[in-house]
Image (cartoon, rainbow over all chains, first blue to last red; front, side, top):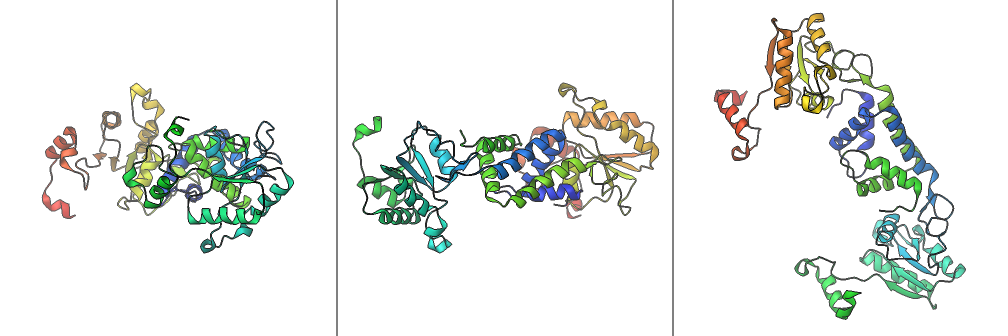
Length: 204
Length: 204
């Protein structure tokens, strides 16, 4: 797709670098911006550049933060001794949106995956271990991907913390709400049989 | 969806203003930018703001241009007396990509549509009429939407130009390549029967 303007071409090529945005979509977005007032476009680019330059990672949990501590860590109404361990910031946002969790988080930045070259040192595991020493921690809830890499990461952290009085839990695994049994994989189905629960809990 | 950072929220809200981008997609794009180096993000925002500030409309055909005249109007290898009349810049790009057209364009900025409050004065029709006086024009090819509004616009321009020696044509209407007859609307089907063409032309 040849464009009649080099500046248009540059903007389209920058937009196409974003995930899931092809050249056609990029062109639609750029032509939309072209029709807006200059101030509107400046507002857009300033919001993007400020987000990149002025946010940083929370010094305690590595969630995104406007201050030194993120809004969750600095909220004293939340249970500070309950830490939910997640892979990335998107997971924090997803769990926050359930409005069911009132503890704090720890963002690892991924899971241990030797094949992808990700070892414990590339993740914020050391900082998590240090938190368990510096802060009183009652429970670690692992909300990691239900994969071998996720399970390995749980196992590694748990082992590093032994002996301890900290309770280790993981979010429940089973058939998703609205999911169909026949399409569930065998591993999920087998585990959901193994970890069957009293029917009464469905109403909780 | 609540976000843990006001700056993140602002960037997501700006991205969600783009057409076809919901909050979830916006968040994915913003988190992608957050992971990039600051220079990469600056490169992105600068390309966008330069595109908005430094491009303008071609003084002759109203296509997007980096100079006073667009790259098509200033290309002297193109037939200057053959003008393809289109609604918007996207149409120029679409036709250019067929590599079948070697004339110039005139971008109207829309079609006459009284119900949407678009009259001839909101469009670049006067400038097109002036072009037919100032430049030698042999043919106007109308490549407008095949709608009542598009047809009205063709009729209006043609009428304004009478009497004239200019040839008026419109791009062919019919069943799209790969389209299925049974799903074509009656109007299209009726017209494609009416304007049937010798089979030999299929091979041209």
